[in-house]
Image 1: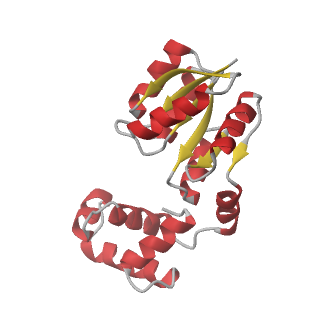
Image 2: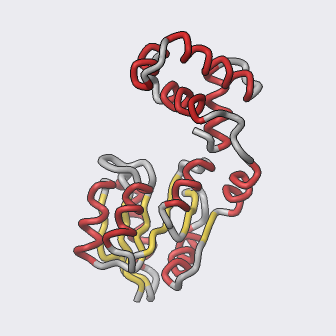
Amino acid sequence: MIRVLLAEDVRVLREALAELLGFEDDIEVVGTVERGDEVVAAALRHRPDVAVVDIEMPGLDGIDAALQLQRELPTCRTLVLTGVGRPANLRRAVQAQVAGFMLKDCGPREVVDAIRAVAAGGRVIDPHLAYATLGSGRSPLTERETDVLRLTAAGATPREVATKLFLTYGTVRNYLASAVTKLDARNRVDAIRIAAEAGWV
């Protein structure tokens, strides 16, 4: 019997997935949580074989939760099931040693098969996202340009970015302009979009 922990903040999805897995003879849902910072405690309590986690959850994102889970309960393998299919998330997930990464628009049977594969020691990655990640190539941005663009994407103004990175306002504007040029973008918003889609920020 494959013991599964579900971590999903949207109740209807969490309950629907639990019901779906309940029809499988070899899978048992042993626990559910709605927050990322509840994953490790629940896993230590229920001892699942597989934790199915979303990325965007309150408290802690699913990839950081997977990293903690790897340290605290290495016998539990993690399958990320997310609607946020960006190359950057896949790269982070691989670094966190997740065993699977699937998108929520996959079919129910694919989710069940992925859980079985992960429980058996295999790895499962959405093929379209894997291809997009491989095709995104290396970032043309410097580390500083990336930092500036990432903070700007999070909503910080150039003056706030300057304060956080201990730079002058003019230097931040120069980094933003350089990033726009390197990414052949129309403006900084377009540069953020291009970099995010490529998984560089």
